[in-house]
Length: 479
Ligand SMILES: Nc1nc2c(c(=O)[nH]1)N[C@H]1C(S)=C(S)[C@@H](COP(=O)(O)O)O[C@H]1N2
Ligand SMILES: [Mo]
Image 1: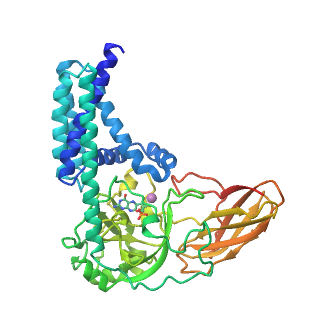
Image 2: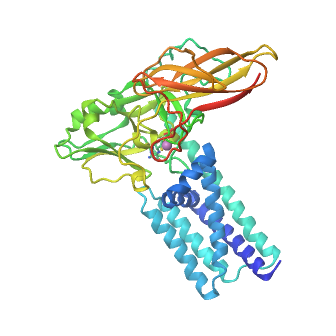
Image 3: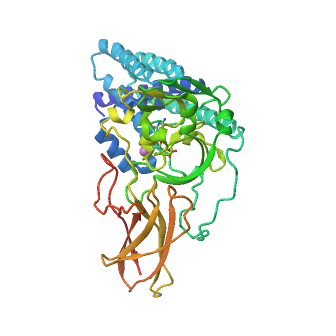
């Protein structure tokens, strides 16, 4: 190893040690330096990088962000060691201060992470004055760092577990009626009619869900209203009703799993407006969350009920889980998750059109995007060898109007309609199935849905950005 390489490796070890120490200090106060760095990466990465990561990482995007941040921070530390010695200390401190200042701009920046980053920067500056060149020195820094990181992770998991317990103690949220049967039962491999919260996709800009204390929490309704309101969770629960709807991420390309169907408990937004009385200058409903995320929706269609929006506080008979936005979120069935309203809601602000949202700043269109109808093939299973029979089944959605029909096509021939399960609600997903005869050999099967408003699923493959994904889910089977 050359001297240079040794120095770089030594600096990387120092970086790991300093980061680990900072993370442990942050974690002991319930925060995380790495989560904060990950969040900065999400907030400041160019849109193309975000899109590419989401497309490639799929449902592992959070792990990718977390370990990517770790690698990035260690590489940055190693990079600092290439500076002349007298610049290293100020550069390390500037790095820590810069990261701290950027994350302090977040609404929910945790003082814990600031304390942790100050400690990490100080330690980094010290260690970089003379990075270890021998194996033992490097090993010591790196092993300490890894140990600290593992300790921090244990503390954070424990805090998350305790929070989950606190959420559970809030008690049931919903009528706990039995979920109606759509006539399909539990078909092997087919998605259930209602997606359990633990299987429901999670999409947000954070590494870990914020922990919000339900006893302290109040939903504030503010801005251009005659009556500003502050409502507790029990007060909201009194006015809530259940509804069934599919939630879909704008990144759900054909066949992927960023969609889930749930029985939600929510207060119709029209009821909240009746109490708060928006003033004439109010044109947008801004949903603000404790993670600094905001998304706004035009007020008029929500106020008239043309778009039936809800302040949601329950999912499948339980409080929202921490991942899915405990204690409250806004959801307008039929609008993509990114536009439908914030999880971990703190405030509903009635504002004018000057407000600019999180994703709009990043280049997404200003107005809400509506979910494009999609059919997904969950099962394409051939029967016993040579039987020629193949069961094809899946789910399809076309909120808010509902699914009128689903068809499949084998090897680019004609579209054939399939059997539909009973409809839970027009905004919910609907299951479908059929058994087809296939000659021996390899075949491709595609599915498409038609909405009750007459919209046929777009067959043209398109990326999620900028208007939502297009294309058909297609699978290959061997008969
Ligand atoms: N506060 C907050 N709300 C948010 C987001 C977020 O990053 N922060 N992500 C949105 C996106 S992109 C989607 S797809 C849905 C996902 O909700 P889920 O994780 O419960 O499936 O939440 C939306 N609400
Ligand atoms: Mo999303």
